[in-house]
Image 1 (cartoon, rainbow, N blue to C red):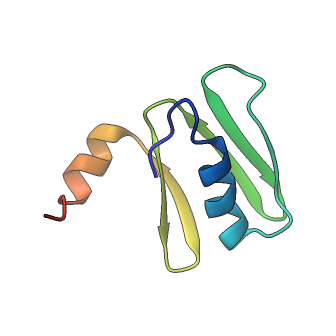
Image 2: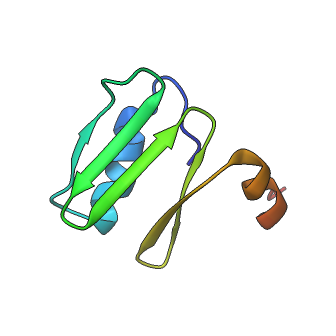
Amino acid sequence: MQYSEGTFEALAALVKSAHPNASYDNYRKGYFHAYNDGADYLIGLGQWLVKIGKSLTVVDDDQFQELFEPVT
């Protein structure tokens, strides 16, 4: 999921799927921060939070475009 204004709840749900007891904040404008329960993700606007299996990783948009192809 790509982080943009208004996607806080969806990102929180994605993190909760891997880290049920994680905490969140976005006090620093332009960032989503998930921490605790094994989570430590700082996601900037335009970056992607990708879940593969039970693992999450943060990738830049150019990396995401290089790794994944759109589904039509």
